Image (cartoon, rainbow, N blue to C red; front, side, top):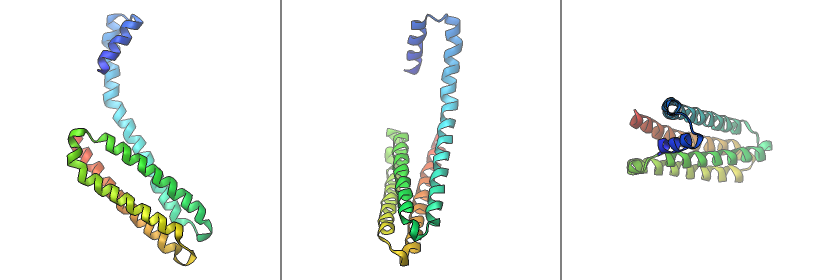
Length: 157
């Protein structure tokens, strides 16, 4: 399909067939070899950013509760987007294979939401305990995430 589009573009531009024979294979090679590496780098950057956000939340005092909750909310939105991307990445034929893992990941995300609600409702005397609960829920979600990513990487190998 991509090759057909490339051929249509080349015809529209009246590129000589020699240029077409060289340029298109190079473009396809770039798509196959470089694009996945760029996507992996992007995922690594997002993962690092999310980990830094969780660490920052752990440093907030009760006086900084509003900022901690805002950061936690942003963090959960990023996680939701990453889960959507992960689900899209899993091919239709492999959905059955990963359905249990995805369900576990979604359960961990729900637990994170519960911990967020507890964090939001907490007062000064239990603030540190609630931050720890949020952090623990995030760690459990991360372990589930890592397991799925590892399985996907092994399937691609």
